[in-house]
Image 1: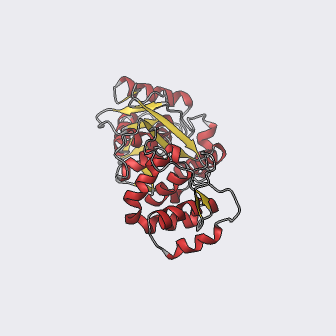
Image 2: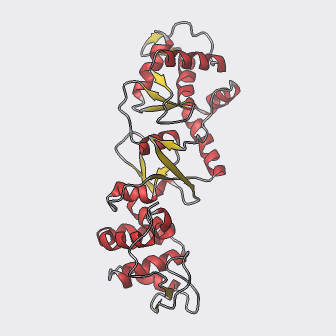
Image 3: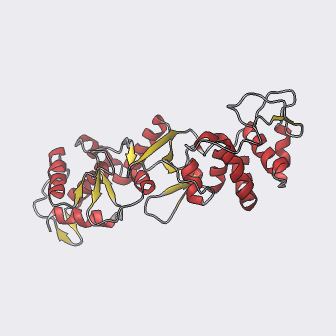
Length: 310
């Protein structure tokens, strides 16, 4: 069997609409190591490790055959669309290109059905650079094996690295680096690569970064419409991952504003700081309108229901 044929079949097995240079490099490397595919010897493969020139030659051949091609819809020279694959959504493509990111904020709210707004931006959360680099090394060692990873690097084959995507399908990508980015923050859904923040994390993000979630007034609307249905997930996530002030803010919303009760919420009341200057919305000025129970300045205009969509 020709290695080009084997590569085409392997790309089909990925069930992805796009392939990165690193993913293609892994396929080439593994086929060179095996020298056999589906019981057939691969013709002309004598070396144990492909060179960078071998990688480029095979990539060019698949591009010439039309199996892979760069696309204006995904403007990065290291990302290739796959022939015959239905165009995936921008969210799925983003998660395929960055294996450690997930859909978050207003985009996650839309996915979960918490908002009827159509986000103009694709909101993503991804680890900080150092953490991302460490995760990439771990992933490459897992993909290639410790010995294979060393040989792969020595051959100067494409490494797993963070690829910048300003737009996908003409939707602007808004990527946010966060120390809170971890596997427990998202769920893998049915699509091959798509990862979306959990319901609990989505509600926590609304309080943590309301400006990325349609604005504070939209957040208040979403809490009013959906928090009661997802109370357990919200409380569990905020209790495990929220800061003290985030617990106070969520506690106020659930308890005093919405009249929802849960034993854990009661424990958060001890975190309220009397005599302090804690605010419901951190970016607005302090207001004398105050929650005595939660020791929180309610610095929002209740009559203002408008918020500029991100």
